[in-house]
Structure formats: structure tokens, C-alpha cells
Length: 214
Image 1 (cartoon, rainbow, N blue to C red):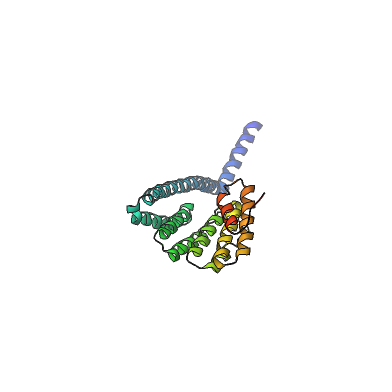
Image 2 (cartoon, rainbow, N blue to C red; image 1 turned 90 degrees about the vertical axis):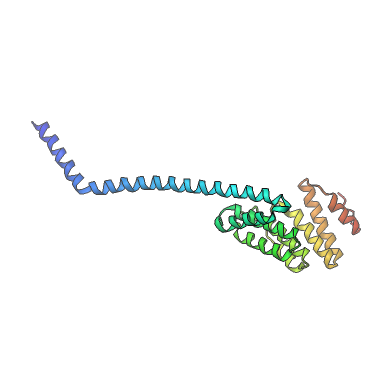
């Protein structure tokens, strides 16, 4: 009898607890399930967007390789930049637009595309490459001071040799042969350390009377 009463008391206690807390328990379960399914839905959404952006980028690359499809290439690039601004494809699209502008000898337009790519890029490893291309475009347009400023990046990463070589090119264009030789020598040392091809740098140094010895 005592056991029966004990069980009855337990049941009543459980009923009372459920009456007081049942709604919050159910709400917690519902919210938990909503969070799980919401997260999965969000992941599916991101995956679909990534796949769509990838397809558009492939179309961009295909059009980019066809001289007669440059209009289509630019349209695909604009689509990536406008519809997928937070994805890296948007940065690559800006680089593609800059390449097309250079091919058309429109250096100011190329610089504009590269500056936008630089602003939207959040990949530290990609930053030096974009800055290097922007500096090269500015150099080609005769804006040497702005080009040198772009090369003042704190960390050129794996592009140290390329940064110094371009600095040398700019100083040579400005008529400062001593500075050009210094930068070419630095570039040569970095290129050798990276085990990169040094033929062009050696030729540039030789043309300035620098042997570029080991």
C-alpha cells in the first residue's frame, strides 16, 4: 500500500511539474528543432549560392578566353560583383575586369576595378597580388608616385621579389638609376631565395651595369 501511495504521489508530482513547466519544455524543444532545421536550411542556401556563383565564374572564364565574347565576360563579372559581393568570386571578377580594361589600353578603368577588388577582398594572401597589379597599372598609366605608394604594403608575402622589381622599374622610369639598381638587386636576392627564375632580373641589372653576382 505504501509503495502504491508512493507511486501515486510521484505521478501527481510529475503531473504538477508538467503543468507548471510543460509549455516551456515544449517551447524549448520546438526552438531547438527550429534552430537545427534553420541552420541546415541556411547551409543549404549557402551551398546553392556557392554553386551558382561557381557556375557563373566558369562562364566568365570561358568568355574571357574568347576575344569575341568580352561583353559577355563583363556581364558575368558584373553579375558576380553585384549578386555575390561577399564571395571571393566577386574579387576574381574584379581582377578579370581589370584584365579586360588593360587589354583595351584603358588603364584608369583597370585601376578602378583593382581598387574595388582591393577594398572588397578579405584574403590577406591575395591582397599583395591585387596591390601589385594595381601598381603595375598605375605605372603603365604614368602615375609613378601613386604606383610606389601601393608598393608600401607592410607584408608583400610571397611577392617580395615582384614588389622590388616593380619598384626598380618605376625608379628607372623616373631616371633614378641608382635606386633602380638597388631595388633590382633586392629583387634578385629574394628571387634566388624563393628559387624563382632570375633571368630577366639579371638582364635588367646588367643593363644598368650591375652584375648581380652571388
